[in-house]
Amino acid sequence: MWAGWPAERVLYLFLAVVAFAVFVQVALFHWRQNFRHWSMWTPVVVMLAQSLTAGMLAMRPDPALISVFVGLGAAGVASGLVGTYFHLAGVGERVDGYTLNNFMVGPPPALPLLVSAVGALGLITVYLL
Image (tube, rainbow, N blue to C red; front, side, top):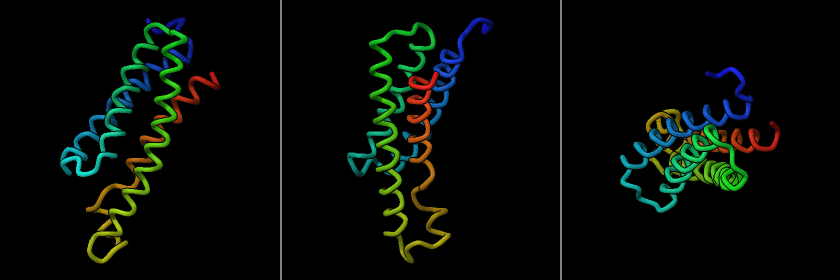
């Protein structure tokens, strides 16, 4: 079944699965916090859209869909970088500020970087393969 698939299609399929897993994790964490800030919706929507678009590209590559995918990848990179700022600021707002305990129980600063990494991998897939 996989024989003859170019690396690009396999990567799109991989990205679809990974972006969906990140979508689930981000949605659960932000739902737990009741989506207190509008920006909490951004990675949820972007990861779901990127997952669906990557899945469609794995099945049937289409130039128009690739353009949408590039936009979603760029939005994912930007969303993750902004999210890292908000998460680090959120850790600092907790009692005692930037302590190891607050990094462990506060907003996870590495998760937004994962959103950026998935977006960047999508851009790498489009532009380097």
